[in-house]
Length: 171
Image 1 (cartoon, helix red, strand yellow):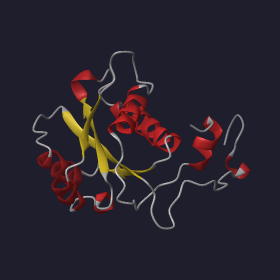
Image 2: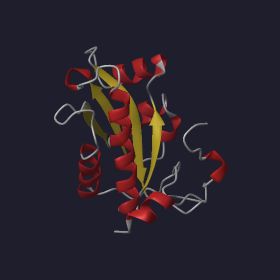
Image 3: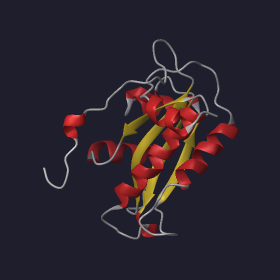
Image 4: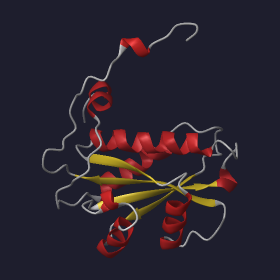
């Protein structure tokens, strides 16, 4: 494990992965991190997760989201609107879960990529169909791909701080 500052400052979008498998233990840790995210209200967290390892399914999914192609594992984050407290703000809860998962991946020495699904209707429909999400209350939000970084990709510090973007009291 690395310290929190290192995790936050080195997380990058990893778009290519080696063939090395990601352990079930690490996937479970990443799922637990997602479930530890703050939600709009305790007990009303809308997230559900579909873990995808099957190469055939990953191949089909890559036809919708090409960056999935080299990942040994992907996790589809699904919003269960019936469990959301604020029915119009579930995206915030889902985003917090996704970022927690990406940070835990770095903590475990893995790379990850947030592949957006929502709010693009066509993509949402295609992903929903692929995973039999035929209930209008189950909304595919994003796909987190996970694996060991390949090629020139790595989690490394890139200074993105820009003091000119900080405003006090008013814009």
